[in-house]
Image (cartoon, rainbow, N blue to C red; front, side, top):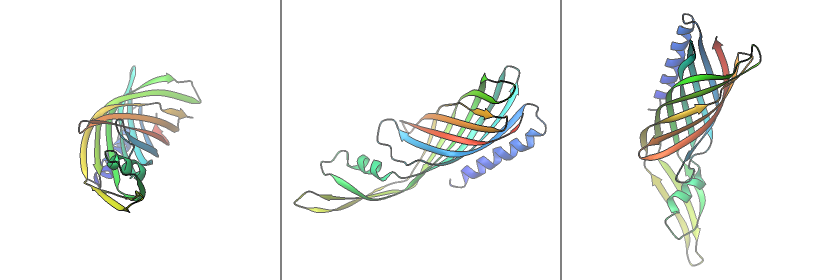
Length: 210
């Protein structure tokens, strides 16, 4: 599972580079940036982390179609996990340590609609789509200490790994500067394992093609 994100990302990017020489109106964008995951019904349990992405689009009369592939990696948010594992108890804990990680691959077909497209300068598009979100989490270990006045000590919780497949919508607002540089805020929401998740990413990168 850990090798899959790079394989998928490299595959779509190499395919896009090859297609660029033949497809009129093709554009490929290579991006990197930060992203933050959260759960809509519980505590946020993952810190902000890095993500890599590739966008590939082809312009046809009246519309631009393509998609986004991205890879996200987040570390465990110890305070969030501590609240999650102790929320049903009466003892108050102080975080000592936390370890664990989560990766997410997103594969999202999308369309782009031009909101602002002057001859030169700034171009603004609306990018909307829906697709797959493949979630893989490592084992999470959280250790917290307690002191009730009459007793003290520490407890360690170990949460098992999980792999989930989700599906949901995504919206982005690509800003293209000088036809070469893109800044892209992206919001994703998806249902996986019966729960709703969401994450926000801010990416920047270079655009190739026309």
